[in-house]
Image 1 (tube, rainbow, N blue to C red):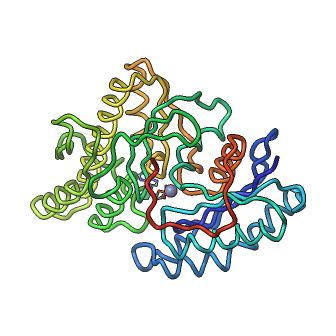
Image 2: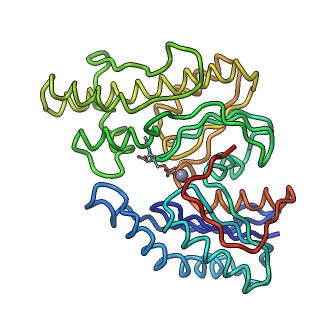
Length: 332
Ligand code: KG4
Ligand code: ZN
């Protein structure tokens, strides 16, 4: 069984081929970072138009590279949401059209399910059940995962997603888009202990998050403490520590409450090295094991969608012939 995966929910055009026995046999990604950078964030209409330009040539390229003919494909999986509706529709329309033309089934995949299952692309994947911390630009979720397709959301952000908080704070600090990796790099120059930011919602029970207050803490500190390089780096450091500590604490709480022994950390912010170090340390203390996708599969990609499609087909999920895309779509 070979599945073609298509990801176009935001600013990355990602495609991949997942082979039931050989695993990932081809993948390619076109990032739109350069296109959106002058605007300081993703421009939805430009994103959709660029997906139109890039998607079909990318599909051709991976099929040529892997020497796979359309008749060898068993199905097509495409990201159907959540995300930017125009961008999603490009992938949904192409996925559905190719599936119809080639006489094979197509399957709508939830973008966050793709992130959640990404560690299964690695050599030692987790067993079910497990707990998942999903940290991306649009979502912050703690999920109890029973098996493929069975997800219980235990906690989520009530305002900004973690990645969004990184991006907004990076913008305040005069860093470019996307801000997450730039802020993390600046934080390496920062000093411990000069500023201390709050750990939002950790002083009360529950597994929800709130990150919008941290950018306010950053701007207030920046105004009060001056605007030199070292102050910016110290703010970046304090911001990252507050985020990392909050996420680690909530994961610890969720592990204890659910009794799970395995934790998956995925999504764009899952590439953050400080977060990985802190969570690994916490999990070791809790006698739990953590699973991460490789760095390039933390951020959006087609491989995680092809893999999710394969796992879903294996689990017997099929659907009628409709083009489906949803800007909003709860994971549960
Ligand atoms: O999962 P993703 O590629 O797209 C969405 O589904 O949203 O996540 C993108 C987010 C952006 O906000 C980006 O700034 C953040 O992930 N990000 C990081 C790092 N790498 C990407 N945040 C902090 N540290 C990083 N190293
Ligand atoms: Zn994503």
